[in-house]
Image (cartoon, rainbow, N blue to C red; front, top):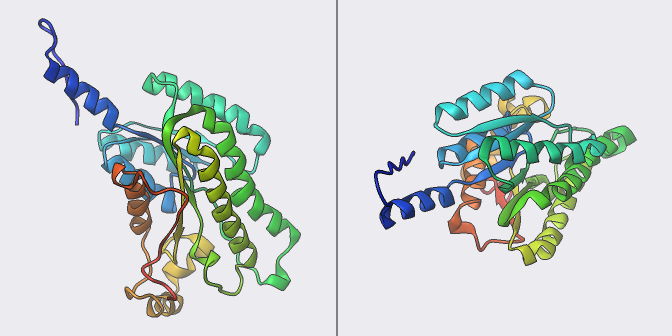
Length: 275
């Protein structure tokens, strides 16, 4: 939706109100890992609602560029920025880059929403998990969001929102995910503390915990292995495994004004898996 004001004389109250309402409606979100998997769905569903996106990617620049182009065909604005959330010493520089992008592309000094989505999956039994795997998962899923959020908070608008991404595996247990699930459990605790401490700025913080989703997570096992897919579907109340848009839509809804009073909560989006 585009509103054009043609000034041929004094502006009417109606014209001013329409423009102000439009500017107030349009929000800007930073979505880490926003060019693929669940992040791709989040970016598209957010744009569908009339908002703009800064999405990050790690290595796949062309894939991120294609996402930007797709969002632009929807009439929205998007920018893709490279970010390795494990390179914690680079986060100050990333925040400065975001500051410049905000001014250049949106003529503003702040953004509205942060979705800490970037992540990987490692499947390893407890007795076979290496220290390197453990440290990698901690660096990406816990330390990365913790300190990235720290660096970006000075740029976040008061009254903004943060959504962290956990996993159903923090509630139920499947062999091979002890380290991954432990990090996600820590993310859920971190979310409550963030909600408590950022309340003075009216920033709401929640965590979304997806169930099993058909993506390339874990080598695409849920998506590509029919036996695994059927097993999970049989244990899910709604009778199927999840799709990326199930999560993208839920995150977009959680960022809507209808959900502004939800704060410090864990929202599992799993179709009722292993109830």
